[in-house]
Structure formats: C-alpha cells, structure tokens
Length: 431
Image (cartoon, rainbow, N blue to C red):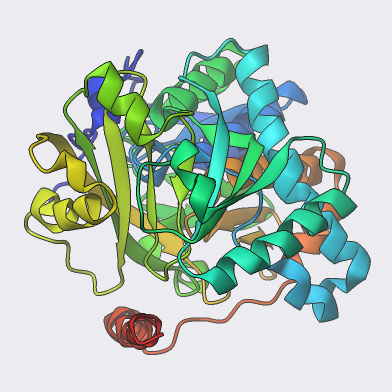
C-alpha cells in the first residue's frame, strides 16, 4: 500500500502559513548526523545540532509535521505529562527535581525559539486545568504549592466552581487551576517554521524519503528508495511511526488514536462567551477533553484516545456529543474540520530518551504520551548535547527511567491495552 504522503485534511493544514515542500532524496550524502523523522523531535534536534556546527541530513517519510507534531491540540503546557515523583528510586530526588524543572523550562525553550526565529504560529498565553471532581480540585492546591517550591515565576491561581464561568462557560467542572505560563498555538506552523530555521542553518531536509533499511557500524548508513545517507550518528525521532525500522524501540511505544474537530468560525460574542480569556483548557478524565479557540474564532476540541487500532468512521459524529456535553449552546454550530492521528503512548506515560546499547551512535526520543509539544524541544536539546559534546547530564536522567515493552506483541498489545483502559473508564464512570 502506498504511503499517504500529504497532510491530513485538518484545520492546521488548511491554514498553514508556509507549506512549501522540500525535495525527496535522490543520490548519496555524507553528514555528521542523520535525523529520521520530520516532526518536532527530529526538526528541533537537527536545529540544535546545526547551531552547534554539525552537518545534518533530515529524512522525513511524508511531509514536515505530517504526524502528531502537526495535528495535535496545540496546547503548550508545562510538565512532562506524569507525576515524576514516583521515579525517585531510579533518578534520586535531585533527578526528580530536574525532571520537574525540565517540564517548566521546556515551555520557555519553545517560546524563545519562536521569538528568535520570528515564527508566526498564533501563540497565546493562558491555560486552565479543569477538575471533574471536588477531589481533583483539592489536589490542584498541592500542584500549585509544588510549582511555588520550584520557583515558578508565572501566575497561577485556583478558581472555584462558582467563579469558573470567568474561564469557561460550562457547568461540567468542580474548579480549575489557571497557569499563565502555559498557552496554545498553531503546531503545524510551529514545526514548519522551525524546519525553515534549521534549513537556513544548513540542515539538508528531504521529504517523501522513507528510510527502508539501516546499516549499523562505526558509521551508520540509511537507505531510501533513491539514495542513501552515511553519518557518524543517527537520531530516530519517529515516535508512533517507527514501525519495524527499529523493533527494539517500536515495541515500547503503543500508537494510539486521538481525534480533533474544529467548528465553523464563531461570532465574536459567542466565542468570547465560551472561553472569555482565550485560554487553553483540558480536564482530568482518563480519556480527557482538551479545547481552545483558534485565531479565527473556531472552537478546536479534541480527545477520545483510542487504543483499539480502529478509527471512528465519522470523527465529527463521534466527537460532537463530547463537544455538546461541555458546550450545549453549540448545538446548531457546524463542524468544518475533523481529523485524527497517532500519538506514541508508553506504559509509564513518560518519554523514552537515550541511545541503543547495541549501537551507541544511535540516539532516540519517543513516547511523549500526548505531552510532546514542549517536551520534544527539551529532548532534542539533550540529544544534541550528547552528540555534540559527548555527554548530557539531562539525557542520563531521562534514560535512567526504565521502560517496559508492551505485552502481546504487535498483534495483541493494542487490544490488551484497550481492555485495560476500558476498566479505568468504567471505574471513573462509577465514581
């Protein structure tokens, strides 16, 4: 079956500012580093390496930002997506503090990159974490205190249910935690802008050039249909789309489907009544809802993570009841865009970053578990440090966290996890 090499029919693809294509690889090249994957991990690793003076070739099988990097909800949120305190036995208390700080500093890294390279991507600040239950709202105080202990410099505030209408016009929540150091943006514009920045620094970018085979050794040779690249080091940034290119890694990540819809442009009064302060929002459910307004006043609403490997036949029909549960006032509003994509889920919901034991010149980062918009930039920095300098303390900390291979092999791991997630959702529904 031929690859679908064009962007999915998403709101982002329809409104991207610069989707000019790069050529496919035709011939043989040599570089210090070859990066496989044109998403946020690969593009930012290439950019970081180029800034350090290394020659880089980036190979992308489809288009820059084709996967989750260009399809996600656009929520730029602090954190790594997991309570990292449980990893203390692996990384120590200093390591836990490093990981918490990395979850904060990674957002600043994205903001600085946008400013430095003048990337137009609709960046807006403001995020509210929504509690579905009073117990979840009570736990937000601990989260706020933890941020204060880290010296978090951005405003945070707890908002009770009675005042939550100032944030969101919905009666579904028990309260929220506002964070003005997180926000939202147009992710496809971001990754394409970062690719342009990398290209301007000498990174050779090739689209529609899937890697067919890797030859390992003191140098690494990557074969495509019409060329090959020889490099001293290799970075695999394929996440949920690694497939059989490196089975030692692909078995540790489960590709899970996530789905998004975008409404027609809303009248200004309606849009501002839904989310008065134009924040990004998400709740605490197992299959969480996340939503925000776009620059042209559409409601962009996502969630409904699927582990079964089967996408809904009608994404809009599947997502509309979820939208209307939060915003019943949108019953007559048209949905203009519907799309889905695969995110890489790990067993412990923590990203996998490191190098192959068997081939120490092969580096990887994957499994962001829905929290990749900020963390990809941080892992890219660590990979580039390790390759350029020979060592990265941060990479050592991340790679010290152990990861399990999903049971059941490729055929059974999705159904087994789907059953497990069904249990959690039933338990959530029963209180």
